Length: 535
Image 1 (cartoon, rainbow, N blue to C red):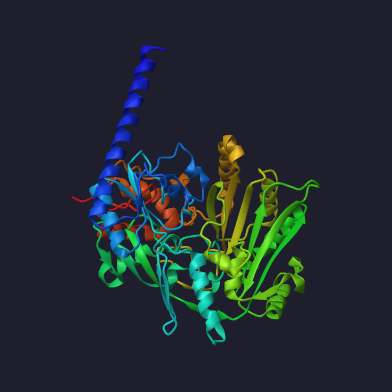
Image 2 (cartoon, one colour):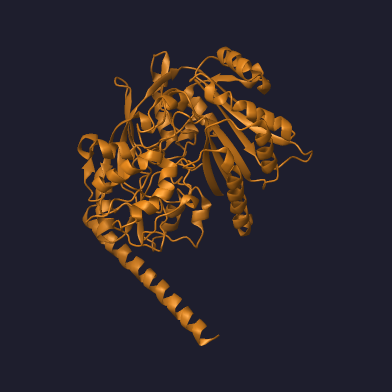
């Protein structure tokens, strides 16, 4: 070993030792602070429960690897008071704050940090209470509740009611997603074409800000209330609870899931036709497309359609056969179920009661990206897209979700989520792999990025849009170097590269809201909204 190599190793060891010793000191500091404030539900790295708690809500296993930095503490508040104390104690211990509700951040931003900054995870899983007010058709839901827990509560209430309709909430299909996380990014789901996004249906909120103070809609002001409903998580504070506007759906609705197989031309024909159907169906209808990569042993490709209609089966059958005869629907493909039963079905659960299971899935190693399509892609180009997919790794896929309906009738600035009128559908690109294939992770991610580049001429431009709930750090990142990193000159310009992809013209208003609620940039991550520099 040369002297230069030895010196480098000594330097690296010293840096790592300094980081380790700093994390230990921070852990001791936050522990003392929490205990003095009556908070006892927390875990430190030396605790036997620590590793399990850290992993408990990690859905993307890329961020469970040993090389990914771990928090100096994980705090599990049981009340609003605990949450306030957790934020104050993290600040006083010079720890960055990561608030986690369900752990579904595609890039792990709710439980990791960048640049080796010491941090604490405030996991909201114990803040999961749901209070339904049937008279007003609203619910207060704590931010750590999962969608499954919310849907189950609404289903139980509806079963006790004599009403001809059921209470529902417009949000996503994955039952283990945290309410706090999905609303903070918008919250698209199967009834969004009828009732708009989750964030469009928020009436009030309790936000705990950077100093541990609690704000309601009235006290935080309309700009901040606007920002927290779709402006991305981790920028504004930690939402303790949301007041939601519930909606009424029929007692029984129609659902279907069906697969189709065939050569490239057949699959392309169905995808091409769907573009002229999915976004234009009546608001009560949702029909999405899922196409995995690769081919079967006989060279055929597969695709599947997921459908839901807030109408009786015969009505749904008639409408779909008229608008999409190529789908060749049979009456046996459709079934009538209650709305809460549909949420369990589309979450991949066996029973409605499984909606309460926060950890039914194992998680996977994955990478995702997203796009928006504003003009139908030609048949010739769809054929090329399907060919590209046919040559991809077995674990790749695209999902097409129809927009239009109520979503398109709201102004693009109603909330930070801007993808309204003019957007036909969204594309979610994904690739996943097993632990045994971790040595090929770069290969899988490289394929996804190359496919995304290939799709560039077919999707939105200037900017090329993306959905913030499908976080993608390839779009650009901040470069905060301290737990609390005040804005620097150029921070806003730097963030605009990815911020306008997610938020379009709403980005500047988000910056102003950030400057109002958190001018010191206490709540920051790799893609948080920066405040304006303070002079």
